[in-house]
Length: 318
Image: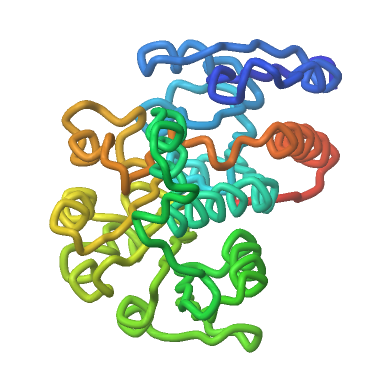
């Protein structure tokens, strides 16, 4: 095992507080904070195992590898890897499923709860001194409403979607679900019906050909006026220009988003012009990254590597 060469290409995306020494017990490990595209070919040239988070490994890059046997992605999604090239060239690919369900569902819930009570507005009324300088014991505007009795639509019903549904039901919400294959433990409806009925919509689907830009101008138009919308899936699931316009027009009452089609979000991004609105909460792709989730992810990757070199198959995509 000690002869295995491992390269971690974008350790900076995993957080400075995460211990990567577990990889040293498996093989000789090279850790790179970030790997600009022009450096990747050299860094994977004689590497046996490549560990990535956000780095894109397409055929143009992968063709330079002489020894690569296994790619481990520190995520559940793997749309940044050319899996067909890997399949044709005998490169195994492993992801990590389920490690961040608690973390992502927690941020989803935090965004919805904050939106439902206008938390940032009421906090600012105290922080600004407006409450202290007034002569009324309560400030009750803007008006907010209880979540109990509202309809919460969940698009995508994997591990994260199920966690969110549990929390939504605990708050007294009516939960409806849109998923490719209906299940018995949830009320499954078409996407159109979900958009029309829901007071709250949260998105938890992987990015693939069928989900790319699945929610665009027509879908936003079909939603209730003032709907709460949260996307913690992938940025490209939205038509982001259409989403920004839906906020600007008032169709969306609150937009929460942790993911973007280009990351980090550039100044030309449609969301950049709405980022300071009181009814918008944009976070820097951190939903997956609770300390416990990241630690769990690294442990899972180490185990994926060990099992692979023992001839087994664990979390294999290819």
